[in-house]
Image (cartoon, rainbow over all chains, first blue to last red):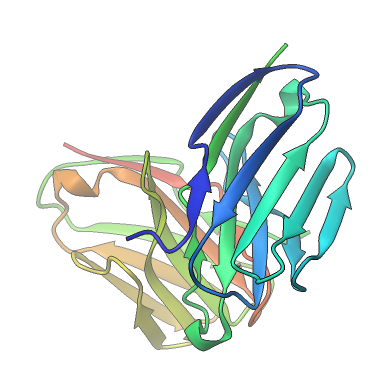
Amino acid sequence: TQLLEQSPQFLSIQEGENLTVYCNSSSVFSSLQWYRQEPGEGPVLLVTVVTGGEVKKLKRLTFQFGDARKDSSLHITAAQPGDTGLYLCRGCKETSGSRLTFGEGTQLTVNP
Amino acid sequence: DVKVTQSSRYLVKRTGEKVFLECVQDMDHENMFWYRQDPGLGLRLIYFSYDVKMKEKGDIPEGYSVSREKKERFSLILESASTNQTSMYLCASSPPWEKLFFGSGTQLSVL
């Protein structure tokens, strides 16, 4: 059973469209990280959210941590082909030490 | 600049061979990790280490072992490679409780 469920698994959109991807769990996390992975590379951290209800913006990307700290969303405005990649969320629980959990990822393709 | 280096980008091995995947980080991080990444299964933790000579099993340690003799180096060992170990292997390092820094990955094919 996957501790973190990401949806959708695949998303293919046209340049300029908006989109939202989700990361859901039944567990409470002390923090949650979002990574992006481009082909042939390892994942790179985009943001860490810590407080329930927190919203962070990174240019056209908006990240939100749920009030109960069980879920998170990533919204991209006016998507660009450069946004193409695998988006991964990673939940951090203090009781788990370094053994932290990744979701399965959302593969985003933005077509020009 | 932060750097995690995996020794091979692509590797092809035969069933039954012993395989070593090497990872080196230059950031003096305490924690190092080995993941495998497969389509539809995401990133799964094989082993991690929080100090020299210390190791902990992740979610899928069967068929693998690890070695951390020096702080900067974390090796993943496949004692007898099998076809179901064909995968992308990713090494990462981090300070305690902080973000992961990943290498570029090793695509291993076991024939």
